[in-house]
Amino acid sequence: MFYGNMGEYINKIFSFFEKINCENQIIHSDLCGNTLFTENKIPVIIDFSPAFRPIRYAEAIIICDAIAWEDAPLELMDILDAQDRDQYMLRAINFRLIIAALNEPNRPGIFNSEVKCFESILKKIIPIV
Image (cartoon, rainbow, N blue to C red; front, side):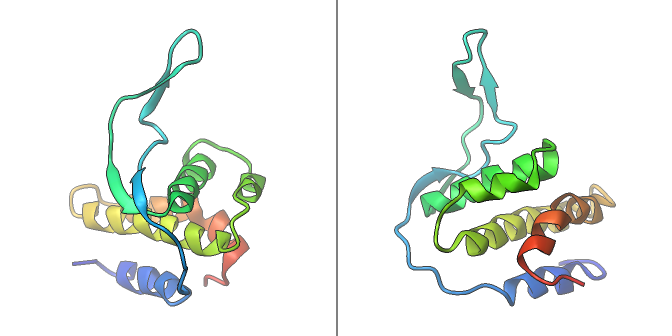
C-alpha cells in the first residue's frame, strides 16, 4: 500500500502513540483551507469532513495544518494546552501523512513534501531520524 520508506516513517510515528483518555464527539477534521471569510470576517465553512474524535484532535489538526501549510509560527502549538498535546499533534500529523501516502501513486512526491511541511513540529515532539 505504501511505497518506499513511507510505511516505516508512519509506523515510527505510531510507535510514539500513547493512550489518551478523552471524550469523542463529531468534529470537523479539515477546517484549514475549507473556511472562507466574508468581508465582515464572518467564517463560512465550504466543506464538512466529519469525524468522531476528541475536540482536542480537531484543534491539533488545525494547528498542525496552519504551521505546515500557512506559515504559522511553531509557537502556535502552545495554544493547545491539553495535557496530551503532543499525542494529539502526533495523531494529526500521521492523519495527514497517511492521506499523502495513499495519494502518492497519483501525486508522486506528495508524501516527501508533506513530511517536510510537518517536520518542524515532529522535531519538537519526537526524535525523528
